[in-house]
Image (cartoon, rainbow, N blue to C red; front, top):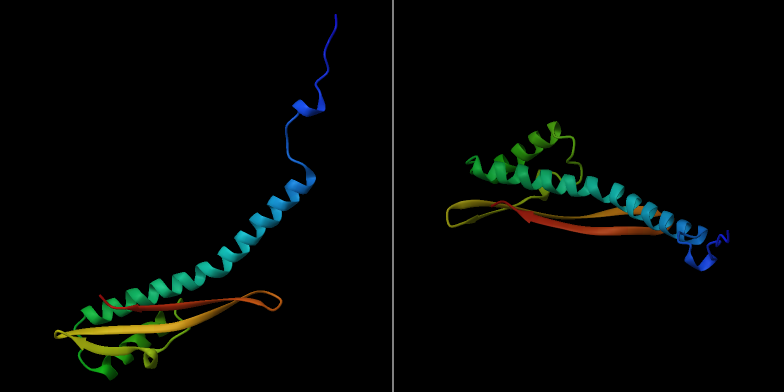
Length: 122
């Protein structure tokens, strides 16, 4: 019986360097996602609140800002802007509430990510 041993070239797998490379890449992506997702959640919450206030029939600028601040005191996800940061206008007899802000996310050391969010009610 003459058994043939497999050659090194026919073996497949990942090297240690390849494993470390993919581990660093996946860890970096996970870190970035864990830092960015809460800011996206805050943006979506602000957009939902602004749309709800605009649809509620509030008519004065101080009333709209006070309503936003009241909701902000209950809604834990909103921490970046306040009612004073809202821009309230009228478009074809409809109240339009818009907002814009920048969020800086520290990643590591001197490296940070700056995301600029803006939105308006429907």
